[in-house]
Image (cartoon, rainbow, N blue to C red; front, side, top):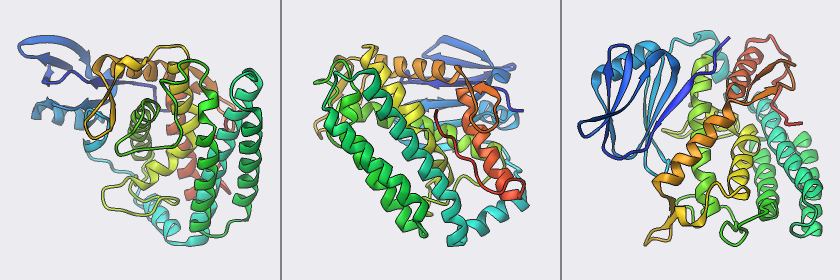
Length: 343
């Protein structure tokens, strides 16, 4: 069973990472800021102008520690990892299923259903816990639309149909996302989802968390022996980790959105920590980015009972468990893929 290991996030611009014995050393200028034993790490994520020594890259490759390079805003650039043997029979079956519409719909449909169900649960909890916030009629309307989407998923027999249902559910959910914000409503208003670039503070926070989630989903696919580039819901595109994006759909609301709302509502992030560029794009400053990373790591260490396996695990291992369940389904050990449904 995979252990929950730490991820080292490096956000200080100009940092240099090198190998020192069996540890990773982080330097800024000539000053050593941090040393961490390599065996305690599951991955290293570098934001912006952060560089690594070739010797550290080699050691990380041998130890199974991936190094990801992202822009300061969190857009993925590149990833360095060692040999991933996987299982050729498992990957061949993954490719065959992805090429067969009926088989791909069965897996993608389970993922979309879980995404819609988890979003619906978030709205139900909000209407129950904070009935005084927002417009109850708007929330009820969004829930009705999402119930309809759940029914539509069961009837879909094409990937394009599933993508249409997923898009409709996302519009219903984000249309009332602002009702889940209980403090700093004006500063973190989200009227529509915007990505490249994010045009408000809430979108900037969500996009950053989604980038972290995508990194973890890709690592989970590779650890399970799956090809992260070949998905079922997301179309193949050069450089896009389709399966990782498929897998993270089940966790957007549960992990990223809930954490974003918690940070806003508890005032752990504030408007002053976001900057607006000349292009209109919004980005976090370094202190806010670090606060978000600390909260993300802390959230991943929380314990939860897996709804299908019935075992207690950490939130950070859920993606790995789902990737392994998908691999078991592809091998024929499970009749269907059991997605993660938040209860």
